[in-house]
Length: 630
Image 1: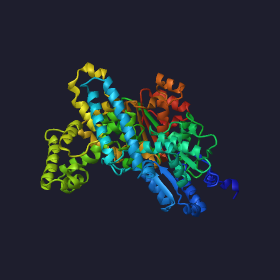
Image 2: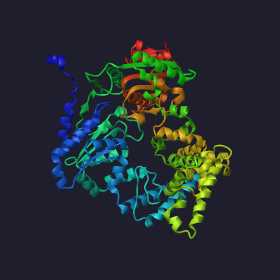
Image 3: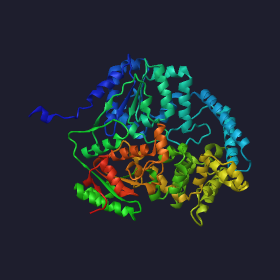
Image 4: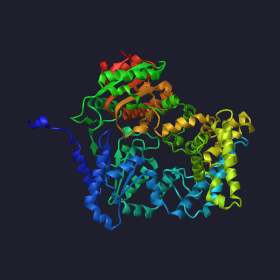
């Protein structure tokens, strides 16, 4: 058979593996940014690079007690890399928070000094705000609680011998650090402690960061500074795809900050998507950059369809069921008729929040940049307090599950700690106090479902659980609402963060369970955050600006039904991100999950304009776009 007939592009990116091997050189390290688009097999390349280092330098590294570090974004990614490198102890593979903590854990004196300086500065700032504000307002009440809380923590610092941190926990202990502090401390130490820098690069001559576009910008900036200072003996490898940046605390346009002397290899082959989907995602990202992928020669053609309906279409879930039936006919795939075998994605969490019933808390918390990432991944302290403590206790009580109640209380309630039981001359009285606190909480359900504020106020009185400072502050501000005049509250408003938490406290507790299911990915809907790095045979993407409230994103603008806003135009002129940029990235991430067939559903104010724009842009052809179901 002729070679030209059997030639394949499967080996298109093999040269990248060779390049990475050259960069990971102890004598002459070359830092790099590896562009790896959707389905490009970046984990395979990362593992091959690690195996190369092990095969080439294991003895040399072992002799000096050196390791190779890998930072990933999720625990699942950590586990996958560790498994594929066969649990090799040469590699330290951790999530960002876990890795950061491991580098200064035990530096208790330095941690104490940093906390003391940071707390003193925060107290000074709060006092300055209080001096300018008005007594008796919600803002004043919130500041007083924050000042008191920070003072208590400051006063306790001298008594803390050892600081602790759990990257997967709530960190409620008095000697624990929180998630943001861990990143701030590590970044600060790297930048301000030359000895720590030298020790760091001596211990880890190679550091690879997966999903670098979503890694904390503060840490990325610190590591870039370390690399610049120690370029001759430290290799920093950033791996990622700027089109797949989805978290707000990631570094915007990270590729523009890469030094000129860095290598910039690129993986071009898409191993996941069928040809039709690869052509589509190339067109989607063409408006943002020059990167394009190729499908594998042995990949099927696949299917992509766009269904456009008016934004006020009634009973959208029923329509979406009919669309799945149509996709079954188009593809000949009977599994399209089984919703459990289709991955339904929303570009924006707001749609899922509305359909599942936690929209009020979503609108309260997701609009605050400082809260958004933690709220959406389930790690935000105030919501985690409800999902991991209050909700499980209420469910255990409602099911009369005494074992689950006892376990939860023993592990989490300050009323039943070993110290509290030991220090009480009458431990049975302490147990009765704990039961009374539970009974008091459950009494809130006697007439109707309580609000989150009623629950927080109840727990604050009984000490059933230790509450996050944010909830204490918001509760104090809320209870102070009637202490000042409207004019005073308007002249001295609470911060956006406290205002958001107050609004959250007004939510009904009924919103907690669907929110908990959503962030645990146990809901029928998922988003770009929940599926990045994953793949599915059948993908349905829902776009609806009305349900999403145009929140941070704008599908109609991306799809051409609406013109860019003055704010979008201003952001473009200033080189800043627009809602169209954000929507394009999310659209790219969701579409690129499909392994076989893709159904896009857009609810628009102007279906005809969307159709014309999509065709003119070359995204889809006329026969692939439907304004009604046959």
